[in-house]
Amino acid sequence: MKRSPEELEKLIHQTLRAVPDRRAPRALESRVLAAIEARAAQPWWKKSFAQWPVAARCLFILFSGGAVKLALMASVLVMAQFDTTEYANAFSTQYTWLTRLGNVATALVDFAQLLWHSIPSLYLYGGLAVLGGLYLSLFGLGAAAYRTLYVNR
Image 1 (tube, rainbow, N blue to C red):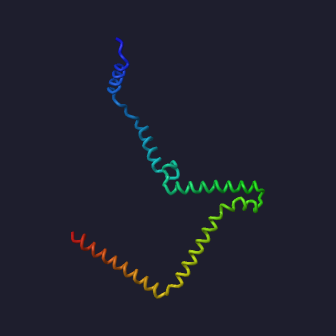
Image 2: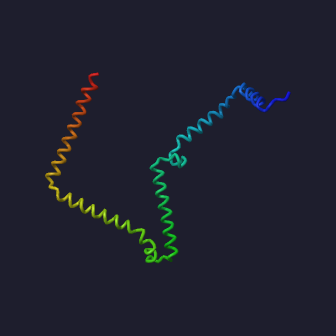
Image 3: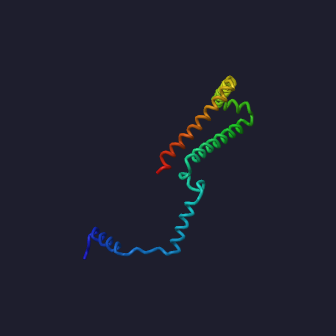
């Protein structure tokens, strides 16, 4: 009796479904579970890159880019035959933003120092006292609210 491929597929499927599942040997089962637990207990730096924390991945990419940049700059220095003036000319346009950023930071620090020294010390001590009083009142209000809402229940 010749059967169509669909009927044969159904028959094989039914026959295989009727076969009971075999249990794995105990030794194999315990080894597999131990391997899974050992893999889960690994620190993050031993896992794949996709499972690293986002901050660690960002820092790794940043440092890798920096290492590539340093390698390229070293190769340019070698190609310039260790002539620092030629090297400085090659990278002078890349460092202008860094110089400007340093100038802005210096100006901000100078402004903050000028502002800090122009405030009378009585105002600073008074501000610290007001902040301390506000902190204590917040602590007292929180304690009173806790006592009112939760202690009596």
